[in-house]
Length: 362
Image 1 (spheres, rainbow, N blue to C red):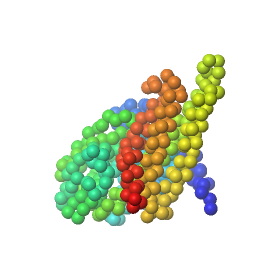
Image 2 (cartoon, rainbow, N blue to C red):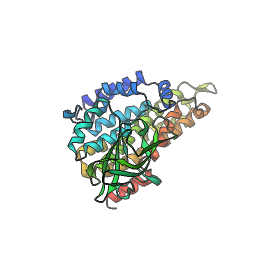
Image 3 (cartoon, helix red, strand yellow):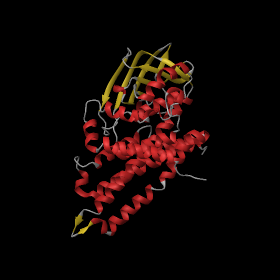
Image 4 (cartoon, rainbow, N blue to C red):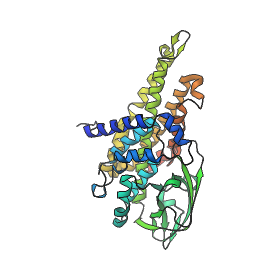
């Protein structure tokens, strides 16, 4: 059995890598993240022209009809390049809409999402970092949504909010369009400036129900966990590569620091910790479409493991760079801040391991 990527997947990954290398160097990353909304429509549209926004959307709606593994490969490359923009929230919202029941809503919105003509986001988490559909406090009466979502990715630039809330029948998903009455968006200045978060308050906002129950909510969240895990792997791999390159050029006491035993051991530990995690990532992404009864547990474990690994890798990288590694002008801080975001968003490692234990009937 072949556990590697297909030729098409390798080509997909390579295409995105080359595009981001050419179109989104760290100078552009910094320019975008320091802008007012943290979003570059030209970069977003360039990725759309490569078909990146429609990867998991069915062909009938203009997408490539691929799988979560393919989407994770894109997330890995975005993590490598520290690419800014609404990819995470958009991907979760797309996964939620695909798992919804309303076929008319799919026909209306999915073609727009596939071409990048519209940007969606997913509003799930609530106060105190709560991500469980059984504990939602946002409510819907009739077709009016009320409540607060404090951690919504790029709500300020999104055309469509896919909101997890509850009505008299329990949890479900509702669509709220940009500019709807009763919607107040407040930007949050977080650590990771490449992936903005907004606080959204709904006060009787008009909402369209597209899914009943928690299945679509859970699907979107689990896809998000896989994509964060993939971003972690890509970012950690970039930090390792930057540090290895630095170690063979930086001289101290008349020698390159890579010749020092302590530095070599640290680099070796980083590499041997990181490389085996790739199989966990790919297997988890594969499970989202092919082993769905176990996918939620695998997603929780992958996110927990890779977020911890990313955190430790980037910290070691900064230490091995010495004084320059601690300065804001040095690019390692881009990945350090992304590691902080990945560690907490959708629930920290302790939270995810507890979920994995519960899902495994421990």
